[in-house]
Image 1: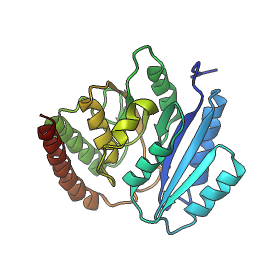
Image 2: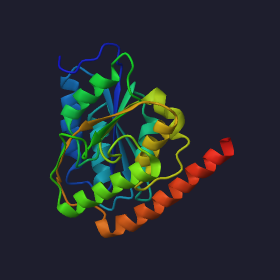
Image 3: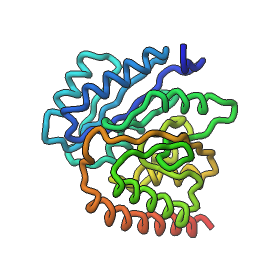
Image 4: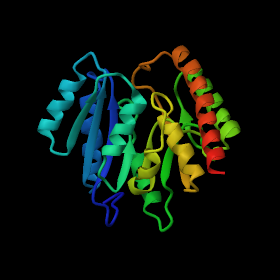
Length: 246
């Protein structure tokens, strides 16, 4: 079967969900049916956070219908906290993180092929900036991603060109690093990738096609200043940790 991996017991798919009543069921069914068709066992962890629509009710119904779907809930909307909760709760050999509006089964095939190599990366990032990627989102979002990528390279010497969006990882390799991450909201996955590189673990990236299935939940003008402040705080946090271990 395409993408089959000898010895892989479970692939955990983590999906944060905030006000996704119109998209959640389609995403869960498409992802789970696609992965199962490839011969993999899986669990899908839906982490509802702060929704004011029927997202939680839909997630619980799916969990009742599909034995491989698990649901947890947070009272406050926080994408990074929901993502962290899901990855920490995952039990699979490999963990794949998808947004409800941004997932690609082809990425799963390619990422798991890398993760099954003799010397695999700890994390595979689906990059909107890597050679061969196609970012079809509106130009303001493409511009912000480009600036964010430059800041990560300049401020953190990051070797990959993106940190947001789809990722696949070895759960055992990243689990100790997850517990060190202090940031949530927009920066949890960025901090995890940075900490993985600082720990000397290899990271790979794959070019992806980025398309909007729906408008962003948070206006870009609100995310930009929040993210910039967060990057400064993250840089200071890592600098202090580095001094403390010197």
